Length: 155
DNA sequence: GCCAACGTTGGC
DNA sequence: GCCAACGTTGGC
Image (cartoon, rainbow, N blue to C red; front, side, top):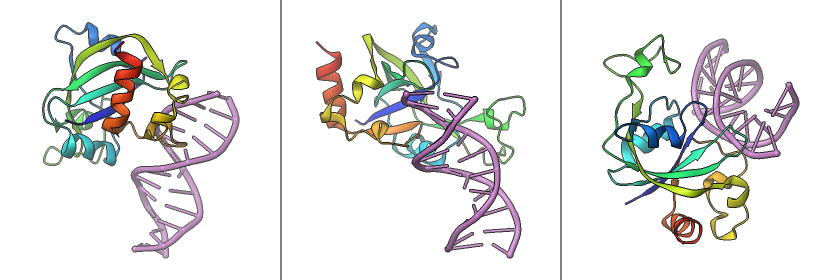
């Protein structure tokens, strides 16, 4: 079992949007970074836990927990010229980009804001907290997840 | 809106 | 394969 942090801009797709979907399931389309793609394609497994992070907003932070619900499949939005995620280099033979199914797992009583996350030395190693990092899908160490879950979520 | 950090592109 | 230019991310 692995742990991940996945960023979404809440004005595009928020944790609440995920929770409100009829089956609470979405495909994580639109990733156009190779390192993030490779995590989805090569390292994610069904059942992995996701910290759902809101970025590019007034109060960035972790807003809920989700779960990887199956293997990566081609992200065909790359083939669609009408899509915001269109990539002219993608072809039907090699769609180039993938997406994973992500399912709602658990909501939080309160979001854990970036500002708060920065105050705990126990998780100062998190990639999210390193200056200049901006990868939209990041692995989270078990020790980091345990601290966040046991100390900041489960009470 | 600013801007630092970083990834990608493309000429050579 | 190098690396400068460019575009994007994302907190502030």
